[in-house]
Length: 370
Image 1: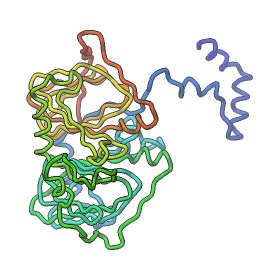
Image 2 (image 1 turned 90 degrees about the horizontal axis):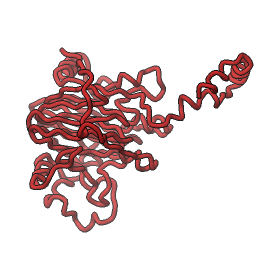
Image 3 (image 1 turned 180 degrees about the vertical axis):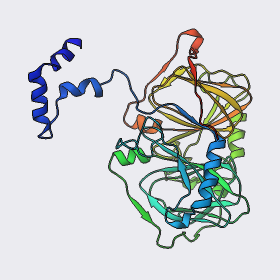
Image 4 (image 1 turned 135 degrees about the horizontal axis):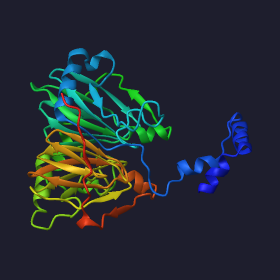
Protein backbone atom coordinates (compact mmCIF):
# COMPACT_ATOMS: atom_id res chain seq x y z
CA UNK A 1 0.00 0.00 0.00
CA UNK A 2 2.89 2.35 0.78
CA UNK A 3 4.31 1.75 -2.71
CA UNK A 4 0.91 2.51 -4.25
CA UNK A 5 0.58 5.75 -2.24
CA UNK A 6 4.05 6.79 -3.32
CA UNK A 7 3.20 6.04 -6.95
CA UNK A 8 0.11 8.23 -6.69
CA UNK A 9 2.33 11.18 -5.77
CA UNK A 10 4.20 11.00 -9.07
CA UNK A 11 3.62 14.18 -11.04
CA UNK A 12 2.42 12.43 -14.18
CA UNK A 13 -0.20 10.50 -12.17
CA UNK A 14 -1.44 13.69 -10.49
CA UNK A 15 -1.58 15.51 -13.81
CA UNK A 16 -3.60 12.71 -15.41
CA UNK A 17 -5.98 12.63 -12.44
CA UNK A 18 -6.69 16.34 -12.81
CA UNK A 19 -7.15 15.88 -16.54
CA UNK A 20 -9.88 13.21 -16.30
CA UNK A 21 -11.66 14.94 -13.43
CA UNK A 22 -12.48 17.91 -15.65
CA UNK A 23 -14.50 15.48 -17.78
CA UNK A 24 -16.42 14.19 -14.74
CA UNK A 25 -14.36 11.02 -14.66
CA UNK A 26 -12.65 9.60 -11.62
CA UNK A 27 -9.46 7.68 -10.77
CA UNK A 28 -10.29 4.39 -9.05
CA UNK A 29 -6.68 4.12 -7.91
CA UNK A 30 -7.31 7.07 -5.57
CA UNK A 31 -10.77 6.03 -4.48
CA UNK A 32 -10.08 2.46 -3.40
CA UNK A 33 -8.39 3.32 -0.06
CA UNK A 34 -11.38 5.49 0.93
CA UNK A 35 -14.30 3.33 -0.20
CA UNK A 36 -13.02 -0.24 0.07
CA UNK A 37 -12.55 -0.58 3.83
CA UNK A 38 -11.57 -3.95 5.25
CA UNK A 39 -14.32 -3.51 7.86
CA UNK A 40 -17.15 -0.94 8.10
CA UNK A 41 -15.95 2.59 8.84
CA UNK A 42 -19.16 4.48 9.68
CA UNK A 43 -19.40 8.25 9.44
CA UNK A 44 -21.98 8.20 12.25
CA UNK A 45 -20.66 8.70 15.77
CA UNK A 46 -21.77 7.39 19.13
CA UNK A 47 -23.66 10.15 20.93
CA UNK A 48 -26.11 10.75 23.80
CA UNK A 49 -28.86 13.37 24.26
CA UNK A 50 -30.10 14.14 27.77
CA UNK A 51 -33.79 14.15 28.66
CA UNK A 52 -33.56 17.57 30.34
CA UNK A 53 -32.16 19.23 27.22
CA UNK A 54 -34.78 17.66 24.97
CA UNK A 55 -37.67 18.71 27.21
CA UNK A 56 -36.35 22.27 27.44
CA UNK A 57 -36.05 22.61 23.67
CA UNK A 58 -39.46 21.07 23.03
CA UNK A 59 -41.11 23.56 25.35
CA UNK A 60 -39.19 26.43 23.78
CA UNK A 61 -40.42 25.19 20.39
CA UNK A 62 -43.98 25.17 21.73
CA UNK A 63 -43.70 28.91 22.38
CA UNK A 64 -42.81 29.77 18.79
CA UNK A 65 -44.11 26.96 16.61
CA UNK A 66 -47.45 25.19 16.18
CA UNK A 67 -48.22 22.36 13.75
CA UNK A 68 -50.70 24.54 11.81
CA UNK A 69 -47.97 27.04 10.88
CA UNK A 70 -47.05 24.90 7.89
CA UNK A 71 -44.39 22.62 9.34
CA UNK A 72 -46.94 19.91 10.16
CA UNK A 73 -45.01 18.42 13.08
CA UNK A 74 -43.41 19.96 16.19
CA UNK A 75 -40.52 17.53 16.09
CA UNK A 76 -36.84 17.98 16.93
CA UNK A 77 -34.63 15.33 15.39
CA UNK A 78 -31.34 13.84 16.52
CA UNK A 79 -28.65 15.07 14.15
CA UNK A 80 -25.65 12.79 14.39
CA UNK A 81 -22.51 14.94 14.78
CA UNK A 82 -20.64 12.73 12.32
CA UNK A 83 -23.30 13.22 9.64
CA UNK A 84 -23.40 16.90 8.80
CA UNK A 85 -25.59 19.05 6.59
CA UNK A 86 -22.69 19.34 4.17
CA UNK A 87 -22.92 15.64 3.37
CA UNK A 88 -25.74 14.68 0.99
CA UNK A 89 -26.42 11.53 3.02
CA UNK A 90 -26.09 13.23 6.42
CA UNK A 91 -28.99 15.66 6.62
CA UNK A 92 -31.55 14.66 9.31
CA UNK A 93 -29.62 11.45 9.98
CA UNK A 94 -29.28 9.87 13.40
CA UNK A 95 -27.47 6.91 11.87
CA UNK A 96 -26.48 6.51 8.24
CA UNK A 97 -29.79 4.75 7.55
CA UNK A 98 -32.25 6.01 10.20
CA UNK A 99 -33.82 9.25 11.41
CA UNK A 100 -35.17 9.72 14.94
CA UNK A 101 -36.85 12.64 16.68
CA UNK A 102 -38.87 13.70 19.70
CA UNK A 103 -42.31 15.21 19.05
CA UNK A 104 -44.60 17.25 21.28
CA UNK A 105 -48.36 17.58 20.77
CA UNK A 106 -50.41 19.83 23.06
CA UNK A 107 -54.09 19.47 23.99
CA UNK A 108 -56.36 20.68 21.21
CA UNK A 109 -53.65 20.58 18.54
CA UNK A 110 -53.81 18.72 15.25
CA UNK A 111 -50.90 17.45 13.15
CA UNK A 112 -52.31 17.09 9.61
CA UNK A 113 -52.57 13.73 7.89
CA UNK A 114 -50.12 12.86 5.14
CA UNK A 115 -48.47 9.81 3.62
CA UNK A 116 -44.99 9.09 2.32
CA UNK A 117 -42.71 6.37 1.03
CA UNK A 118 -40.80 6.16 4.31
CA UNK A 119 -41.72 3.67 7.04
CA UNK A 120 -42.39 5.25 10.44
CA UNK A 121 -42.84 4.22 14.06
CA UNK A 122 -43.61 5.86 17.38
CA UNK A 123 -42.71 5.05 20.98
CA UNK A 124 -44.75 7.00 23.53
CA UNK A 125 -42.59 8.43 26.29
CA UNK A 126 -44.79 10.85 28.24
CA UNK A 127 -48.35 12.10 28.64
CA UNK A 128 -51.82 11.02 27.61
CA UNK A 129 -54.87 12.04 25.59
CA UNK A 130 -53.44 12.13 22.06
CA UNK A 131 -54.19 9.79 19.20
CA UNK A 132 -52.82 8.95 15.80
CA UNK A 133 -55.22 8.22 12.98
CA UNK A 134 -53.92 5.67 10.45
CA UNK A 135 -55.98 4.74 7.39
CA UNK A 136 -59.13 5.92 9.13
CA UNK A 137 -58.49 4.26 12.51
CA UNK A 138 -58.00 6.50 15.57
CA UNK A 139 -55.47 4.90 17.90
CA UNK A 140 -55.27 6.44 21.36
CA UNK A 141 -51.76 6.36 22.77
CA UNK A 142 -50.41 5.76 26.27
CA UNK A 143 -46.92 5.81 27.77
CA UNK A 144 -44.86 2.81 26.73
CA UNK A 145 -46.96 2.03 23.66
CA UNK A 146 -45.22 1.20 20.39
CA UNK A 147 -46.99 2.15 17.15
CA UNK A 148 -46.19 1.55 13.51
CA UNK A 149 -47.01 3.41 10.30
CA UNK A 150 -45.62 1.49 7.33
CA UNK A 151 -45.00 3.38 4.11
CA UNK A 152 -47.78 4.95 2.05
CA UNK A 153 -50.45 4.84 4.79
CA UNK A 154 -52.37 8.02 5.61
CA UNK A 155 -51.59 9.16 9.15
CA UNK A 156 -52.07 12.24 11.30
CA UNK A 157 -52.35 13.15 14.98
CA UNK A 158 -54.88 14.87 17.22
CA UNK A 159 -55.16 15.61 20.93
CA UNK A 160 -58.49 15.44 22.77
CA UNK A 161 -57.02 15.15 26.27
CA UNK A 162 -55.71 17.58 28.84
CA UNK A 163 -52.04 16.55 29.20
CA UNK A 164 -49.18 17.24 26.75
CA UNK A 165 -47.85 14.17 24.99
CA UNK A 166 -44.28 13.46 23.89
CA UNK A 167 -43.12 10.55 21.78
CA UNK A 168 -40.17 9.28 19.81
CA UNK A 169 -40.43 9.08 16.04
CA UNK A 170 -38.17 6.91 13.89
CA UNK A 171 -38.17 6.64 10.10
CA UNK A 172 -35.93 5.26 7.37
CA UNK A 173 -35.62 8.73 5.80
CA UNK A 174 -31.85 8.63 5.07
CA UNK A 175 -32.16 5.25 3.36
CA UNK A 176 -35.10 6.22 1.14
CA UNK A 177 -33.52 9.62 0.37
CA UNK A 178 -30.21 8.08 -0.68
CA UNK A 179 -32.03 5.57 -2.90
CA UNK A 180 -33.96 8.35 -4.61
CA UNK A 181 -37.35 6.94 -3.61
CA UNK A 182 -38.91 9.80 -1.64
CA UNK A 183 -42.62 10.50 -2.21
CA UNK A 184 -44.84 12.69 0.00
CA UNK A 185 -48.51 13.68 -0.20
CA UNK A 186 -50.61 15.82 2.18
CA UNK A 187 -54.16 14.71 2.91
CA UNK A 188 -56.80 16.86 1.16
CA UNK A 189 -58.93 17.11 4.34
CA UNK A 190 -56.08 18.19 6.64
CA UNK A 191 -56.88 15.50 9.24
CA UNK A 192 -58.31 12.23 7.97
CA UNK A 193 -61.87 11.38 9.02
CA UNK A 194 -62.32 8.20 11.11
CA UNK A 195 -63.69 5.23 9.15
CA UNK A 196 -63.32 2.47 11.75
CA UNK A 197 -64.05 2.14 15.46
CA UNK A 198 -61.37 3.66 17.70
CA UNK A 199 -58.49 1.28 18.53
CA UNK A 200 -59.91 -1.23 16.03
CA UNK A 201 -56.78 -3.31 15.45
CA UNK A 202 -55.94 -3.37 19.15
CA UNK A 203 -59.42 -4.73 19.92
CA UNK A 204 -59.00 -7.42 17.28
CA UNK A 205 -55.86 -8.57 19.07
CA UNK A 206 -57.34 -8.65 22.57
CA UNK A 207 -55.90 -12.14 22.91
CA UNK A 208 -52.36 -10.87 22.51
CA UNK A 209 -50.39 -12.47 19.70
CA UNK A 210 -53.06 -15.09 19.01
CA UNK A 211 -54.07 -13.72 15.62
CA UNK A 212 -57.49 -13.66 13.97
CA UNK A 213 -57.60 -16.31 11.25
CA UNK A 214 -58.21 -13.62 8.63
CA UNK A 215 -54.68 -12.37 9.37
CA UNK A 216 -52.95 -15.63 8.45
CA UNK A 217 -52.23 -14.00 5.09
CA UNK A 218 -49.57 -11.31 5.22
CA UNK A 219 -50.72 -7.71 5.51
CA UNK A 220 -48.70 -4.56 6.08
CA UNK A 221 -50.12 -3.41 9.44
CA UNK A 222 -52.64 -5.78 11.03
CA UNK A 223 -51.77 -4.47 14.50
CA UNK A 224 -51.14 -0.74 14.79
CA UNK A 225 -50.47 -0.38 18.53
CA UNK A 226 -48.42 -2.67 20.78
CA UNK A 227 -49.45 -1.94 24.37
CA UNK A 228 -46.85 -1.41 27.08
CA UNK A 229 -48.29 -3.88 29.58
CA UNK A 230 -48.27 -6.70 27.05
CA UNK A 231 -44.63 -5.97 26.29
CA UNK A 232 -43.83 -6.15 30.01
CA UNK A 233 -45.76 -9.41 30.31
CA UNK A 234 -43.76 -10.89 27.45
CA UNK A 235 -40.48 -9.92 29.09
CA UNK A 236 -41.62 -11.21 32.48
CA UNK A 237 -42.19 -14.57 30.82
CA UNK A 238 -38.47 -14.70 30.04
CA UNK A 239 -37.31 -13.97 33.59
CA UNK A 240 -37.40 -17.63 34.58
CA UNK A 241 -34.61 -18.24 32.07
CA UNK A 242 -31.02 -17.05 31.84
CA UNK A 243 -30.67 -13.64 30.16
CA UNK A 244 -28.95 -13.31 26.81
CA UNK A 245 -25.33 -12.40 27.61
CA UNK A 246 -25.30 -9.57 25.07
CA UNK A 247 -28.84 -8.15 25.29
CA UNK A 248 -30.36 -9.22 28.59
CA UNK A 249 -34.07 -10.04 28.44
CA UNK A 250 -35.12 -8.75 25.04
CA UNK A 251 -38.22 -9.06 22.87
CA UNK A 252 -38.89 -7.89 19.33
CA UNK A 253 -42.05 -6.24 18.00
CA UNK A 254 -43.30 -8.27 15.02
CA UNK A 255 -46.02 -8.27 12.40
CA UNK A 256 -48.42 -11.00 13.62
CA UNK A 257 -49.57 -11.85 10.10
CA UNK A 258 -46.16 -12.95 8.85
CA UNK A 259 -43.71 -13.02 11.77
CA UNK A 260 -41.48 -10.37 10.20
CA UNK A 261 -40.41 -7.15 11.88
CA UNK A 262 -43.33 -4.82 12.66
CA UNK A 263 -41.94 -2.35 10.12
CA UNK A 264 -40.36 -3.70 6.91
CA UNK A 265 -37.08 -1.76 7.18
CA UNK A 266 -36.72 -1.20 10.94
CA UNK A 267 -36.54 -3.67 13.80
CA UNK A 268 -37.71 -2.55 17.25
CA UNK A 269 -36.81 -4.17 20.56
CA UNK A 270 -37.52 -3.77 24.24
CA UNK A 271 -34.81 -4.95 26.62
CA UNK A 272 -34.86 -5.42 30.36
CA UNK A 273 -31.51 -5.26 32.13
CA UNK A 274 -31.77 -6.37 35.78
CA UNK A 275 -29.96 -4.34 38.42
CA UNK A 276 -26.24 -5.07 38.29
CA UNK A 277 -26.41 -6.90 34.97
CA UNK A 278 -23.39 -6.32 32.74
CA UNK A 279 -23.70 -7.52 29.16
CA UNK A 280 -20.74 -8.81 27.20
CA UNK A 281 -19.38 -6.62 24.42
CA UNK A 282 -20.14 -7.29 20.78
CA UNK A 283 -20.53 -5.42 17.53
CA UNK A 284 -22.59 -5.87 14.39
CA UNK A 285 -23.22 -4.34 11.01
CA UNK A 286 -26.56 -2.81 11.96
CA UNK A 287 -26.79 0.46 13.90
CA UNK A 288 -29.16 1.18 16.80
CA UNK A 289 -30.92 4.14 18.41
CA UNK A 290 -31.85 3.73 22.09
CA UNK A 291 -34.37 5.39 24.38
CA UNK A 292 -34.18 4.77 28.12
CA UNK A 293 -37.73 3.90 29.08
CA UNK A 294 -36.89 3.24 32.74
CA UNK A 295 -33.86 2.94 35.01
CA UNK A 296 -30.26 4.09 34.86
CA UNK A 297 -26.86 2.75 33.96
CA UNK A 298 -24.25 3.18 31.28
CA UNK A 299 -23.15 1.82 27.92
CA UNK A 300 -19.55 1.49 26.78
CA UNK A 301 -19.20 2.19 23.04
CA UNK A 302 -15.75 1.72 21.49
CA UNK A 303 -14.14 2.31 24.89
CA UNK A 304 -16.16 5.43 25.78
CA UNK A 305 -18.59 5.34 28.71
CA UNK A 306 -22.03 6.88 28.13
CA UNK A 307 -24.04 7.30 31.36
CA UNK A 308 -27.80 7.23 30.88
CA UNK A 309 -31.04 7.47 32.83
CA UNK A 310 -34.78 7.58 32.15
CA UNK A 311 -35.66 9.77 29.18
CA UNK A 312 -32.20 9.87 27.59
CA UNK A 313 -31.43 8.81 24.01
CA UNK A 314 -28.20 7.44 22.60
CA UNK A 315 -26.97 6.02 19.31
CA UNK A 316 -24.66 3.08 18.61
CA UNK A 317 -23.17 3.28 15.08
CA UNK A 318 -22.71 0.18 12.99
CA UNK A 319 -19.69 -2.02 13.74
CA UNK A 320 -19.09 -0.35 17.12
CA UNK A 321 -18.17 -2.40 20.18
CA UNK A 322 -20.81 -1.94 22.88
CA UNK A 323 -21.92 -3.34 26.23
CA UNK A 324 -24.59 -2.24 28.74
CA UNK A 325 -24.49 -2.01 32.54
CA UNK A 326 -27.63 -1.47 34.63
CA UNK A 327 -27.36 0.39 37.93
CA UNK A 328 -31.02 -0.47 38.60
CA UNK A 329 -33.70 -2.48 36.83
CA UNK A 330 -33.82 -0.82 33.42
CA UNK A 331 -35.89 -0.96 30.24
CA UNK A 332 -34.31 0.12 26.96
CA UNK A 333 -36.35 0.63 23.80
CA UNK A 334 -34.35 0.52 20.58
CA UNK A 335 -34.82 0.73 16.84
CA UNK A 336 -32.26 -0.59 14.38
CA UNK A 337 -31.65 -1.10 10.67
CA UNK A 338 -31.14 -4.87 10.89
CA UNK A 339 -33.83 -5.60 8.25
CA UNK A 340 -32.00 -3.34 5.78
CA UNK A 341 -28.69 -5.07 6.41
CA UNK A 342 -30.33 -8.48 6.11
CA UNK A 343 -32.09 -7.49 2.89
CA UNK A 344 -28.70 -6.71 1.33
CA UNK A 345 -27.07 -9.75 2.98
CA UNK A 346 -24.63 -7.48 4.84
CA UNK A 347 -25.34 -8.38 8.45
CA UNK A 348 -22.34 -9.68 10.38
CA UNK A 349 -21.52 -9.79 14.07
CA UNK A 350 -18.51 -10.30 16.29
CA UNK A 351 -18.11 -10.89 20.02
CA UNK A 352 -15.28 -9.57 22.15
CA UNK A 353 -13.32 -12.60 23.31
CA UNK A 354 -10.80 -10.84 25.55
CA UNK A 355 -11.03 -9.48 29.12
CA UNK A 356 -14.10 -11.62 29.87
CA UNK A 357 -15.98 -9.86 27.09
CA UNK A 358 -15.56 -6.39 28.59
CA UNK A 359 -13.99 -3.32 27.01
CA UNK A 360 -11.37 -1.12 28.60
CA UNK A 361 -13.02 2.21 29.42
CA UNK A 362 -10.71 4.89 28.06
CA UNK A 363 -12.88 8.00 28.48
CA UNK A 364 -16.34 9.24 29.46
CA UNK A 365 -18.80 11.08 27.26
CA UNK A 366 -19.70 14.56 28.50
CA UNK A 367 -23.27 15.37 27.45
CA UNK A 368 -24.68 18.80 26.68
CA UNK A 369 -26.61 19.89 29.76
CA UNK A 370 -29.37 22.48 30.25
